[in-house]
Amino acid sequence: MTITAARTVIAVGALALLTAPILARQGRGGEGPGGERLSPACRAELVRLCGAAGREGLRTCLAEQRGALSQDCRSALRARIAQRR
Image 1 (cartoon, rainbow, N blue to C red):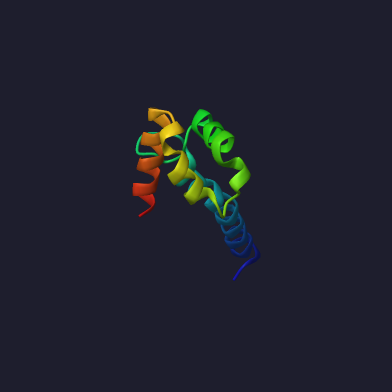
Image 2 (cartoon, rainbow, N blue to C red):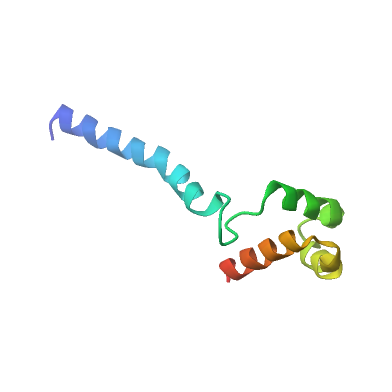
């Protein structure tokens, strides 16, 4: 393999390593239809209601507090849960 070919292979590999996480994040993390990510307002509402429960108690807290969630946040959360199943 020539030096130029080796450099090209290294450059392509480095580019793939750098762009893979960015592309993966765009595919699952952007806000949009289908509940891909909860809106900042909904996340703030969840923290306000269940932030003290921590990750371990989040499901239980959400089940107990679901009536206190706004309709928009409740719908977004349902869509997000359905997407993950």
